[in-house]
Image (tube, rainbow, N blue to C red; front, top):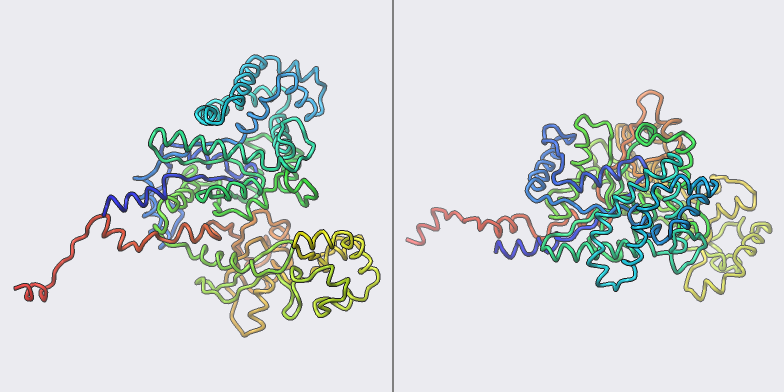
Length: 571
């Protein structure tokens, strides 16, 4: 029985792939470095940040990890980008650097000449590697991507520093976008057939690592340090059931301090970095090729809060990583935290949202995590959600009750709808898509404004608060708010007024709601970055493979102690 049990658990824990996401300065590289170590720098339960039953859970996690830990192979995304760069010869590479940085080619060539020999040698090696058959490449890929390319990338970074401190970051961000757009390092023209080129290469590297581990008869654990495009995560999730996307978050003050002190970024460089990683709005093909950390965080399976002010180095970060890695290796080892349970409810509730722009869920509890109300962003009760309406039905006068008097009778509004949607109605119909439209966007286009008041939906937090007012008095003072996004200024003010003491949220960059609403006044709500598992990962990590009692009995053949009644019957 013990051997059979071991076989079952080994089958489920011999292959784990973790993709890390988060803004530069949040701690993705630090987390990957921790996971790639021979041991985790874990604090004792008494020295950890966990309290009460959470500390008891952590003690179980630590005991498990201390025995079962095996380091992860660290796949650095910069190594994959370097591979694409190395398809270019040195003159082509210098031209790309000059174009990206807006410099004279002759100046770039002069600065990079000392690195030319190393570049040319690796260029030739990569050229020969890519020309080989897939089976042969699989045998060599592990060494190239996990051992050699990281060293080359670091050396190239030092060479680029002779041009400027930001040259490396600017170049690799540009090349990453080019690869997603065209499949080539030096070509930015969008080719829709190349959208998944980047994650396809990552997937091949994963397969090569799996092949290598099988040859050596060991588990295959991989950590990918920087997933910055949501479609890359979706691609990998669709191909590996054991892939988990983990967001590493920290408050913005910590992140900015790290960028200034460790990365030596100027204020202008930080502004440019933020615009690149956290774009306000992406249109057209940029949705597919650009970095979008906010969306990556939104679809993450696990959220880690990196405090960056740990008295014991990175022990708090390491203890959180250990918690979820242990559950990946042995599901159901401990139960979820109360915070995870409440946020999971909010996460499930957001699926009920009929908003076609963004789905958000919210939960209000008392101070003991007893749920008092649930809400999601949606139209008021009795009104039809946007996803269930269509431009075609509005123009044809079908399902009139779903549309307002203004939408049905305003000449200007109907002309705008006709202009935007008439030519594509038949195409959408052939595709089987309902041609929903966002009233707020259409009205703002009509007025030439960006007015949030035109939204048809209540915010999730607002809806949760109103449910209590609508269906009966429940005291909220002293209670907690859970939201799958972060509260806007309006909802932050409502939470303040209702006496909410803690707000747990996922999006770590909540605009000015923090500094303008929640950072002053008497007894303001405390903001807490959420840490935990959500969605399908919540169920996968916390659902035991079998009742723990059965597992212990099978593992150790626990003896049964006969009672006196059994002894008399036997006599």
